[in-house]
Length: 457
Image (cartoon, rainbow, N blue to C red; front, side):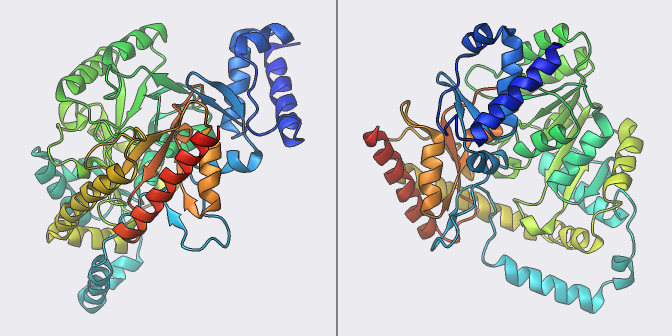
C-alpha cells in the first residue's frame, strides 16, 4: 500500500474511533515510535497522522506530555481559537478575544457619521474606490505611519484593506502558492494558519531565539540551507507577539533581515499589537523595505468593527498586491476608510492609543494580583497573558470548566504551528470585558478553577 494511502487509512481509523467514543476525550495516544512499530509505519508517517488529527481539532500535543484525544466539540472550538460562553450562561465574560473599545468611542463615532452625512461627498462613498484605496486615505495613513515610525512611508506603497485578516489574505494571494512552505514562529496567529490551510500552504515552524524573543536568525539560516531555496516567505510578529507577548530586540531584527537578504526571503510583519509598545524597535519594514510587507490593522487601536487595515508593500510587488485586492474584495469600504482617515489626521486615534495603553497596563496589574502564585507571564503593556497549566491537569479540562461558568478562554495549542506540540497553557485576553471589575471577577474564577483542578488531581 502506498505511503499516502496508509497515512490516510490511519487518520480515518483514529477519527472514527474518536467519533464513536472508542478513544475517549483525554485519552493519551501512544508515543509516535510505539505506534509506528505496532503498525509497521515510519515514524514520520505517524507524525503526519497525529498532525492531521490536531488540524481537525481531534487531538492536541502538549510539550513533555504527549498527544491527547479531544472530543469533536472541544476540538472544533479550539480550532477556531475561541470558546463561546455556555448557552444561557449569566454574565458571560470573553477572555478569548481582544476587542478593546473605550466608552467614549461610541459618541465619537456618532458625531463623525453626522458630520460625514452633513458635509461629505456621499456620491464618492457610494461608488467603488480604487483597488488600493482613495488617494486621500492612503495619504492620511502614510502620514500617520511616517510619524509613528520616524521614517517616511510613501502613499504609493500603501494599500487600504478591509481589516487585518483581509490584509493577510491579500499577502497570501500575492506571494504564496500551494505546496510552497512558509516559515512561521512555533506559536503563530491562528488567522494566518487558517488561510494557509485553505490554500494547502505548508507552514514550517522556525526555531525561537534563546529567551523566547521571536525567530532565531541562526536557526532560520540553517533551515534555508536545508530547504535548498524552497522557503521564500516568513511570517512573524516581532512587536508584541501573540500569544507570547515578546518584543524582538533591534539586534535580532537586524540579524533576521541579514538572513532574509542572504536567502532572498520575503518577510511578512504583523503589527496587530505593536501600537501598545511605546518604545518599540523600528519595524522590519524600515530595515528591509525592499522585501518586507507590514500589516497595520486598526481593529485593536480603533475598533474591530471599523474593518480597516493598511498593507505596506515593496514597490516591485504592487501589481501582484493590487491584483489580489481586485480578486478578493475589490476595495475596502470607502465610508470606513474615510472615518479612519479623519481619526488618523485629527489626533483622535493617537488619543485612543494612549488610553488603551493605560487600560492594558492597568488590566495586566489586575491579572498579576488575581493570578498570583500560578506562574502567569506577560508583557506589562499587553492585552493578554499566558497562564501555565500544572503537569497533571489538562488544558481542555480547565477550558471546559470555565466554559461551564460562562467564561471564554483560549488554549495555547490554538496558536501552535502544524506539527508542533504546544506548551500546556492558556491565553487570557483582557481587551473585551466591559469593565475592570468584570475582568477581576472572571480572573478570580479562573484562579479558583485552576487551583481546584490541581488539588483534585
